[in-house]
Length: 398
Image: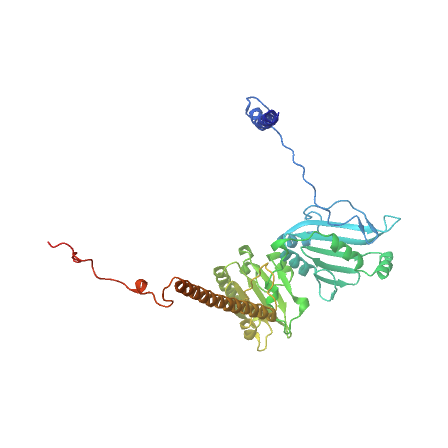
């Protein structure tokens, strides 16, 4: 009975495997049949989550869905700059509270970029002088009822645009709905979330923080008041620039390129452009360090050369391993290891001595019981090198 069940089970498994093979081969044979219609595959793709939620701070969104890449819905003055920055998605909508729905209280627009570098450049482009810093997202400023902030790869602009909105702003605090929006915005992952290192190289002493402008293309560079001709910068070589003003009126420009060779070529082009401008550019000091080009223009009484000489690239390495323990913990672990080694070595040496004594005295006792001397054994210690009688140790004579 047992053999019969085993055979039946094996037969069923063979039938299942054969049926599966026919199912796998069948579509291929059908596709290869002459005159057969081509097989059309339909793939369903889930649309991305809208940038703006349906509800925000108790207010209802007036529009449904987003505007794709947004270039058609954005002000033409801003479109070229945002395209350089890598605009990915755009959404703009009004929000209203209760009835009537046509009385809009809040207007919000969101620009999502490919990476944090594009978002920082767009944030600097929208930021205007005199805006007050706010504690919101990664960076935020406000001016009256308008709030501008950056969160990851997104830049948000919002404004209360009615008397009811102003009253509601006082009731909630203007940052409450924006904090809800930050929780809703898509989060960047991996290298796309890393901010560019170039702005961190600006010296802090005497820096006017409102004047810092990071640019990735010629349109944004010109719009944010760059001092160099865009064609001399070489944005077609993947250049990055940051411009900042310092106390006294001096302007410091940092330019980063992919390789030192490109930086050297652009440095020569920038030097030629500065020579053409003559004294209109003010105090000009230029230095190149690897892929970095540093330039001072404007009014620098005696600090221009010191400024460019004091900026250096920093090499940083990061890893995902846990950080080492504190020093005293590592010292305690080392002491415990050495103590264990010493104890093990001592115990091993003592065991070897005891074992040697036991074997030696035991052997001596056995010899005494056999009637032999305990300490000497001439028949074992003597080596007889004499040859046997009648044999020539040198071998047979020739």
